[in-house]
Length: 79
Image 1 (cartoon, helix red, strand yellow):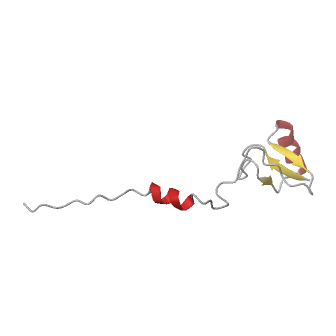
Image 2 (cartoon, one colour):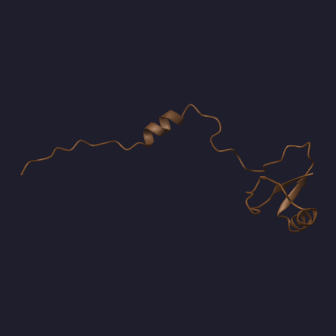
Image 3 (tube, one colour):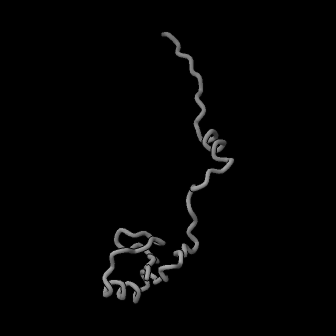
């Protein structure tokens, strides 16, 4: 049985597989809803969590270029 965090549990973030639990601790966390049990052969369900930037998009380069501040030329006057 795998356990998936419904909320932060120790070093595990929401959606992470929670490892190293004793049976007693797993029962406690299940009872309060901090984790959910998932059959071992099933991929954990992430709910509404979407990966951030795993795949580059065609707009990535354009966005980065647009985010860079434009330098303005200044002339120094001698005084």
